[in-house]
Structure formats: C-alpha cells, structure tokens
Image (cartoon, rainbow, N blue to C red):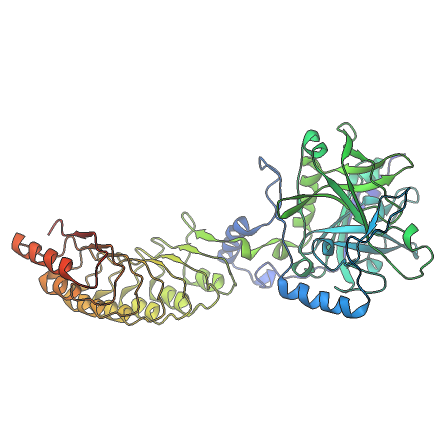
Length: 526
C-alpha cells in the first residue's frame, strides 16, 4: 500500500538551519556581486561533480595528520590495542573486528544512533563528505509503522570503539530518505547532514557509480556495527568488517548481491572498495539473509537525488573544498577590488596559479594581494593590464608571503621608473624565475634599480621590452652580478637605435661573468 501525498512530502526532514552562506555572510545582506562570486567559486570548489558528468566519482579525502595523531593517542590511552591482523573469526563467520576504528580508513564509518517512537536502536553509516553520512533509508523511516526517526535523537559516532567515542557524538541537522523507499520500499537509502564537518577530522570516502561488470571485478568491503557481536556486552559497540566480491548485480531492482557476512546493526554500511590510495562507496548495505546479503546500488539516479539533497540542506559551505583549488582564472567573470578582498579571506592553501589578466583591479587590488598571507603556495601571478601604476607596484613590492612565487606578469601597468625601483627592493621573492615587465615606461633609472637587485637569484627569464631603457639602461642591466641563472633577456623596442649600440649591448651582456647561462638577448625593433 502506497503512502499518501502528505506522507511523501515528509521525506525531507530538517531542523533549524543557519542563515550563513558559504562565505559566512548573512543571507539577507548578500549583494548581487557577492552572490556572483560565490557561485563562481562553488563551480571550482564543490567536491561533488554534476549528476550530468560523464563519470560520477566524488572526491575522497584523508583526515588531517594532526587530527588523527590526537585521536589515536586518546584511543591508545583509553584501552589496550591488539594487532589489526589478530584472528577474531570462526568457521561460520568471516567477519574480523576492526581493533583501531579511529584509524583511517576505518574512521569514516560510524554508529548511527536513533529512536523510533522513543525506542532506541542503531544502524551504521559512512561519511561521504565533510558533514554528509550515507546510510540505509530504513534507519530513518520505519516503513511498516509509517514513522520517521526522531530528528533530535539522531547522532553519528564515527570510529566508535567499545565505549570510547574518539570523535564525539555528532548531532544531525537534517536528514533525507529516498522518496521511492517511503512510497513502495524500493531504493533503500538516505543521508544525514551533520551539524559539524567532522569529516575534516576523520576523512571521508568518495562515491562512484559503476557498471555491473566493474563492481564484480572489485574487492568490496562491508564495515559496521553488528548487534550479535556485542549481545553480551551492554552499552558496547564494536566495528566489524569483511571483504569479498559481488556475485550478482540486479539492474532491474538496483541491488548488489554478495556472500559477505553481516549482522543486524550493520545496515547502512557503505559497500566500498579501494582504488590506489583512494576509497569509494558504490552501494549501501540494506539486507541480510542466511544465504546472501544485498545492497542498494549507487546508480546515477540515486546519485542525482543525493546531490539535490545536499544542496537543499543548507550545506553549501561544507560542500566546498578549498584545498582542491590549484588554479583560478576569471576570464568572463568581472572581479573588482571588493570581490578580491572577499576572495583573499580564504585559505586556499593549494592555490598555485591566479590569473587576473585585464581585470583592472588598480592599486587597491594590488594592496589586497600584497597583504594576503593565506596563499602561501602561489607560484604564478598574472597581473597584465590592471592599471596598477606606481602605487600598485609599491604595494606589491611590500609582499612578504608569496615565498614560492616563480612567475610574475606585470606588463602594461604603467608602473614607471619609481615602480621599478620599488619592485627591485623586494627581498621575499627568492624563487622568482620568470618576470615580465614590458611596456611599463620604467626608463633608464628603473633599469638601474633592477640591475641592483640581489634577491632574485633564480631568475631565468626577464622581459623588459618597450620600456624606453636606451643604451644607458641596457648598459646598467649588463652589470648585474646576482642573476647567475639568467637564460633570456628581452630588450626589444628600447630605443637602442644604431647597430653599433646594439652590438655593444650584446657584447656587454655576453661578457658579464655572472650570466654564465645566458643564451638569448633580444634587441629587435630598436
């Protein structure tokens, strides 16, 4: 018998949602500009690909080393630890106890504690995102009794071991159950959205939609908290696991079948496999019999539903993985100083390339960049055509945090001779290899200042084309005694008029005893 419409509409359960967007601003105060930037960044950072992607495989993330060390120390102090390969199986049961559940990759699995009509029970779940737990739908909705789990009773306890709760009991913000499960007990799955991104500490598995033959070729695992193993141990919970292979994939009912031993309490376990150093969930364990166990297959339609739930669930800010961003290019997106200030607040720890070509951020934008201390791994900064001027050059020259900067493009910014003098005094960019300063009107005085620089000892390519250097500026550059790795010097279009002057400059550069690696001096168009 199907549920009525009012029941179907209840599949989305939510508690109190906060009013913060992914950047921490109150929703009612967000400007159109911030909304646009937010959407742009989401497209770069979301750990879940679009359901329309050709391959559905979400990101797997290992826990931070410092978090795991802390938790493991606490666990070791709490109770004796046995060796992981100690035999804890009998002839009729192939399961093995996980003795250190706080360790990766076991740390992503957890106990789902809940109540139906004040009756306490438990199941298992697996973290698939910073605050997203995949579990069985019947852990959240009792189909026979037509009752949902009490939201306030729901907790997720990752890595629980005996009576030790290494990561704490995490409360649930809201949960979702498959509408097809509510309606006709098909597609048994659901998700919890936690109030805390505990997955940043425990790590989390990725999701993968696989073809039947792919699944059958994998060694799959089921890990969870069975009741039968702790029946004689009140208030004790143990993690048990077993691996095997899928014996059948029923595409009509979207079920995976396997001969992996399980028990009551393990329902909701992720059916997972290892691929290199990563781990992926391809199903949800939901049914056990005397002969064969079954799991809901992670199909594209299931993934699409999960994807929609996650974005409905006031969850956007924790679906963003800032550490996944290595390159930012804005192209058709118009970023200004306000947007840049907003962006600079975030610790994009792996950002290596920032392309701001022709965004006209001006001196204030340069100031924002110069004062940024979050992007420690930035190696390529593209600032061509940004109206930086002298003031912007001075701001950039004061930067002390871009210690890994290796490529800097400042062409067409009208920084003048004083701007060149300011840049030449920077002592932090010791890894600078490639510098483009063409068309900045730096003149002979600017060239003289650059020639005195002693910090850019790794510099290989320097482009000073179209800067009105003249013979005086070129001669000054040829006296530099610090750029021992210089390979290429571009001086085209610098008012070095006669052939005699060109030959003299060429000879001076060749004779520079420091520039032993120099292979090219470009004096065209002079």
